[in-house]
Length: 303
Image 1: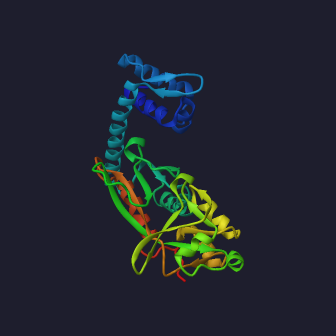
Image 2: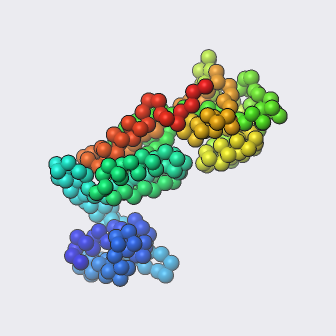
Image 3: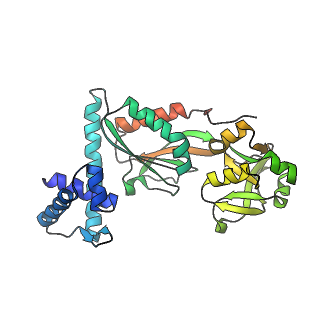
């Protein structure tokens, strides 16, 4: 392998966390990838990676070198994409990050459609529920729910505003009664998105604006799906986005509550690095997402 191939192998080892995983992603043998990185280190006269029986991690110098290589490889991929776009069909790798539940239930079908439309683009989709820095972690585009932190290094494009609702099962309401005002939530079993340390308050809108209300929280979770499932199984009242609760609301498994005091809406946005031009493959994905998740998304449920 030449120097360029060694650099690409090195960056994939860092991103994949090891030689075996990088080799699988590159469709090469582990020995070939290992030799490419060793040759690169010998050429540079610098140790780039710390190797142990358990893990492979970059040295301080290796991490600095990785940051520069990742930017250069990203720019190169963009250059290839921009040239091939003149031929009318995008190519190359596309790394996408998204929240777990949204990615599983909604983004996955759009990505399948995207791949059918543009088969020469190779997609890597990573789902998790933490705040990801697309530049630091090498993503072409990141989907984020909530208000993104304003930064000069990222471009933010709003895709859709999603509603949130308070909801519970009919059986729960029959047993515990239905709250008629937000203050009564403290007498109910509430299912809260967040951690125990995040407190037990919900912010709801009303005639006097948005206010915080203390709730009696019986369950905390850092993913909305367990909260939805607990609500469906009559365990309490949950605050959920309609892209999580929509099907259960439509089927009657859940009912909305306190509709005159709704939670604030949340925004789904696409973020991508500002230092790169918007490549054709990224632009086409964002355009497709905007079309599929437009002002009145299919998952929304209106009473």
